[in-house]
Image 1 (cartoon, rainbow, N blue to C red):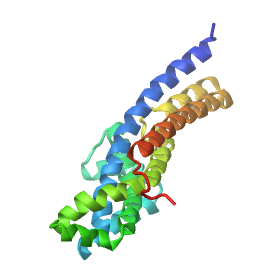
Image 2 (cartoon, helix red, strand yellow):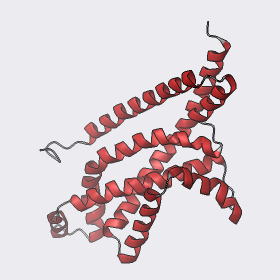
Image 3 (tube, rainbow, N blue to C red):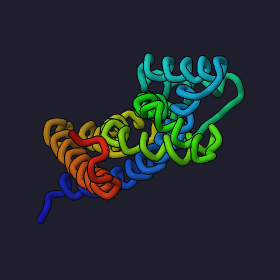
Length: 220
């Protein structure tokens, strides 16, 4: 029979785990979609669009995530924009993750050889069709390991959501640790929770890589 401390700890961490999943899943999906769009603009856009997207990526890659979260949650109300703690956290994660994902996508797009465009145009594809149907599918396969790595990072830095009062896994654990003054035990268990999440994510992402692998493509 578990002691009252461990019963409360497990209950709180399970509640926090559910909130962490609510944060991670939409943030990961939104970050990848934003990264694809911004990465394409950075690789193929005109000068103005490319510079705008480069600026966005530089800002969100060059400033700490916790500062971005503070601005979204505590700063925006000063100009009349009030976001819930959950919305601010997800928006911050999407914008930050999307900036990093765009760099993986941009690099993968630029790695596709020029003769791919020539072959597509010889078959009657327009520039837009060539990019959407020929270049992007190949680039996404090349970018997948980097994008997967960013998702792993996202799982871990989702722990920052508690700084804007969104009580996810770390926030719930910190509350229990403060109440009972048993920080070592609590944060050791929190670490195991994150280790499990990351391990499951790695397993799923490896299966995705294997499922999208084309024999001989990108292998040496």
